[in-house]
Amino acid sequence: MIAVALTAATTAQQAGAAPFAAYVMDGRTGKTLHSQNGDTPLHPASLTKMMTLYLAFAAIEQGRVRLDSRFTVSQHAASMPPSKLGLRPGQQIELRYLIRAAAVKSANDAATVIGEGLAGSEPAFAQQMTATARALGMRNTQFRNANGLSADGHYSSAHDLTILGRHLFYDFPQYYSIFSRRSADAGVGTVNSTNARFLDNYQGADGIKTGYTRAAGFNLTASAQRGQQRVMATVMGGTSTAQRNQIMAQLLDAGFSRSPARVAVVKPATVVVQPQRVRRATVPQAQAVAAVPRTVTVRPAANVASIATSVAPVRRTQSVAAAAPSPGGIDLSEALREAMATRPEPSPERPVPARTRAPAPVAEGDDSGSAVASLRPPTKPEGSSPDSDLSPDSAAAAPPAKSSAEPALAPARPARRDSAASLDGGTVKLASLESGDRPAAGKAASTNWGITLGRYRSKAEAEQMLLKTALREADALGEGLRKVGESKRGYEARFVNLSRAQAQLACDKLQARSQKCTVNAP
Image 1 (cartoon, rainbow, N blue to C red):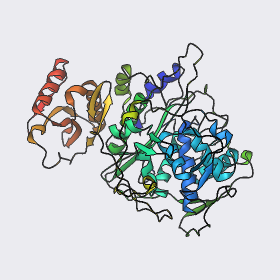
Image 2: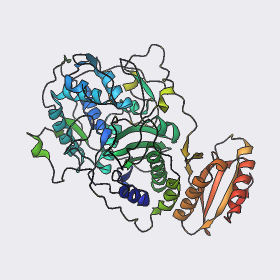
Image 3: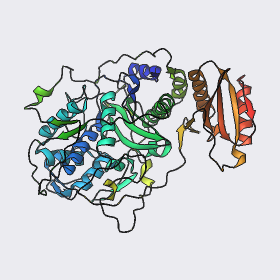
Image 4: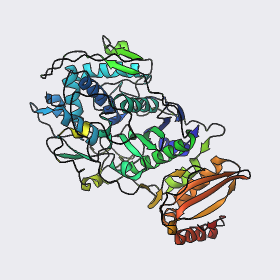
């Protein structure tokens, strides 16, 4: 188990912030790598939209709707608070644009239109969402709406939301690439991703979804792949976008270090969703759904009460006990405590409301801020169809795609910025090399220098020292990679991929604080 952010969670709760929870899973097998309040029911905020999109993808695959099916915007949907697309009552808009707006911008009005269009009303859709959650194995989840705005009886858990993220990856690989888009055409204009900062700053990240409300705090379900490994995680109750992303990066790093390099993939059981009612828009003739092994059929419950669990509706004042680290786990709490002592404050675009006075009105459901507005839209291949961002991704990370009735071209992904994460004003590479890894072939000799911080009794101790050093000396280490070398005498904590000047500067700074450090020449 990986004990992370215990002090951060306790401090946040004492300050009156949303309760904290974290869960880390091996994406290939579904095995738990870490859980801290993982099964505690909390406000999911816009992570709710993952289920809305799951049901939309299921309806498309079953032939009940198409990407070009036009949905009518109700007065209720148009009245949703931001983040929103700005839809008008009576307006008709294609499903492909609603999906893009809900997945990329986290638009509350778009998600509500999807739910009403598929089930006839948002309450009916919420029942189907909850019934599907039960079939997927989400035991601490109940939905009341399609967008995630706070409501009594609307809750989920970090564990459940990670399960849902894994099902999106394996059940609908042909649509999964939408979660890695930095921007998208939503019909009425271009929308920018609420998750662009994390996607750009964490090596291997390819999704999935952010969420924010006052009651929930800053939430994120993320997925990343490195080599044959895939790790998925959920953080709930962050105090800012930067702090949440920082904790997520450390959780994923620790997850990659704990999961096996190679393991047989165990895909989750497929769920076939049965609609509650025929939607009102014109739809193509229903297509037969091929039988699949290990299939669960979901039929909606007669009413909400019949699918409710014994878990009481979550409220903002709910207390959450911090989980204790398990024996032999990686305790990152000290490093996190030091990082959070100078953690970035919430962005001006999305401040955390002051606790000493009545909070001013603030839009809920979007923590993107304005920083992503300057990102250029991805370049589409010439002649590509408007729905190309909902088609199978060409990257090898995704499993083989299912056949889709909607032909489309795979999009060209925008070039990512250097895979580094901004931590406390500095930049530090978040990759971690295993014992047998080496710098990439052909790398200039000038970056083959490194430093050694000493030898430790366990790999966990070495990893913790590397993390603490990365947080303290981000500027000096630049793009240095953390590496733990194993020998009969113990575990060596090293930074590699440095220039000679970087290595010497980092060692000089560490030795000035009486920290052992040795420069390693190529």
